[in-house]
Length: 393
Image 1: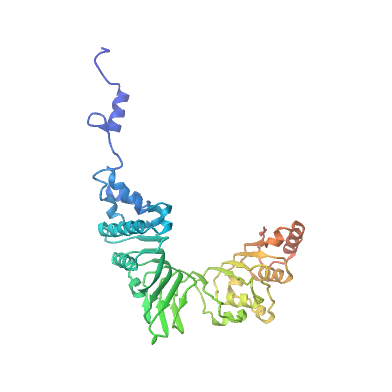
Image 2 (image 1 turned 90 degrees about the vertical axis):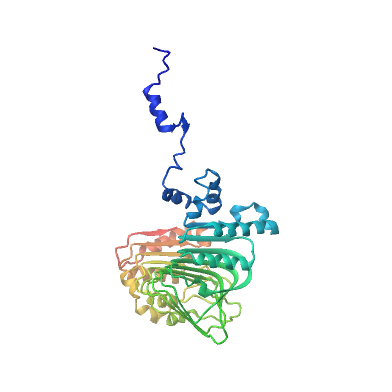
């Protein structure tokens, strides 16, 4: 009986689960439906997704249907690309060309291009034009390019929901008006908008835009730029260039701001380390008046920026402070009387306030005794709400 060659039941089960055809292992991953395999590959940068083509015949062209492309020269090559080796750069451009040529998905959920080196402008234009014809939804460009002009109207893609552009030295030729019907997120960095000399104003319509971040952008030859974004929830503007400005008066900024009724989060950063100008308390209040539904507020001012109490403005409390403000964070806090006045104003008038966080400046953080005194001052302030959380760090 012992020499009959029978196999224990447990061993039979192991073989039936682990393989077939004489005990050979089964590639269970390859047996998964294509849509699941596409989903798995979508988590990989395109370099590695393309690399999966060597696994088997089934995988050879599987990546060509993945609706997500992430291309980065830092992933494709070693550090020698930093030297600008022409052969290495040519290899990267050829790789991108081949990817776009072989890719078969009619719709692209996400296309990301990140380049540390400057590449041929003609090839770059061709890449972007090809992607915009594929119903791309999320487009992210972070590239270092030689100066070039690109028609902004190319981005007027009906499918775009997210557009993030960081292309130093790029100039986008701008028409008099444009509409982005589905765009929800717009991030612009180091972008120049230019137009014909006869065009002095531009109009942009974003019916469903929720987030807009503009960093160091320029408008050449435009006297007026109108932006319609009725559903905006988050706005970050970092666009002021003072290199040719001798005087900048901040207490009037509220007069030039439209009302942002849909914004819920506000962060104000004042960088005046190198200036004698001060940030007026009234200026801050005037900004809050234009944002009636803010519930989260972060205020950052370096040590040299002194809050100046602007009496008349404080008589009318902003609507957001009275009804909606729940969280406040004050950074670079020095413990001055006027900063204390700001905290007092918020604690007294913010009826919905739940938490206020005060972060000490560098100098204050090095003085433990002063920190204790400042914290005691904060705890003694009267409160108009049920706010019982004051974090001091």
